[in-house]
Image (cartoon, rainbow, N blue to C red):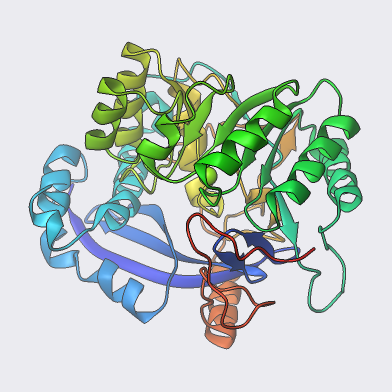
Length: 403
Ligand SMILES: [Mg+2]
């Protein structure tokens, strides 16, 4: 079996409402690049990449000369052909490699008639539990609905998601408003859903001192962990005595950093992102290192559609040491590009796909519709806030939005 073609299509899929974060916002939609890898026996494997547009599509297609004639089974060979660690100093292709790895695993699974999780050691669970992943949201521009700004709105939104999807773990994406205000919001969640687990992620926007103060104020709440409360391994290391586990998806995203965190611990939980780490298999390898050293793992979300969500489900299915619910932005989306539309949550979990390969297929009509929508709307700057023109944050930040 040999790779004969690689295609890339940028799509944009609407969100219920714009999602705010410490660097800016997702402006009411996600922009993603859908990657298709075709083989000489007519199989098509699917991959997905964050962002899009002409340059992203060209970057994906630009790897065809590297991979034409390559056997999709030869995944380690592909890793060194595309992301040799020293060559990567000049051409960082980690996320491009991830999309190609997803597609090759999809092809291998289809070729053998087995789901990807069977290629990764076999599944240990039939469904992966998820947290509710709550954002402060601007109202939807057309409908005026969907705003989340006040503690009451946040608690109501969380209760609605809990009723609809069965979440029992809730993650607040903060770093938007002053820390004291976000503390009130976090407490409102605890009060609205007693017995449920909580986590807070200000995207590293707080100073070490503010993070310590926030942690001290929530010690008695049922916290899973504090996620990137401050910037950097050295900042996080200063918080190791706060009595709440620390997690990161920003500063342990490769094996060098993981080794550093083992030798000189900064975080207790590593959030594995199938894109940031360069594929599903690097995440499985990283989870094995974490298992060896008793570091916790969870599955991170970087704003996925159904293809990347499938990679997160296969990953979550095979990790023995998945000790926390996964994150997904997925329930903020209004639709998906996969056949059958969005996958469903049942009791706060999503079933692991059972079909061959990734177990999801493209809905060509939806792909065309959301590709057209991208051509109409274009990209948006992730690190700008539509409500605050010209604004940008510092780290640690002091330029908070006013609620
Ligand atoms: Mg995070």
